[in-house]
Length: 108
Image (cartoon, rainbow, N blue to C red):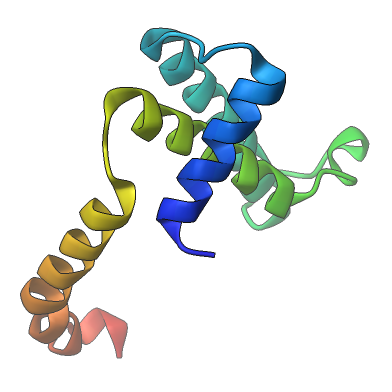
């Protein structure tokens, strides 16, 4: 699925089930909360913190999908064509970072 289609799927869901979008500030707070949940899993599962028993059944993929959902909501409600923005960003990164990363001794 491409990003443009994902934006439409989210918009359709909001219109059918969510009544309306939360305002942008509420969604920004929601995004922060969802990113925090991802950070908690990563820190405890892959970092040095011990994983609490209550966190062991948390699904990283589902938490990342929650982040994506809120990002798509923010893009929709602010009129951002995220597919276009992503494509432009990847092009810029490819041109800017190719040699830099290949020449980075830390990455070898």
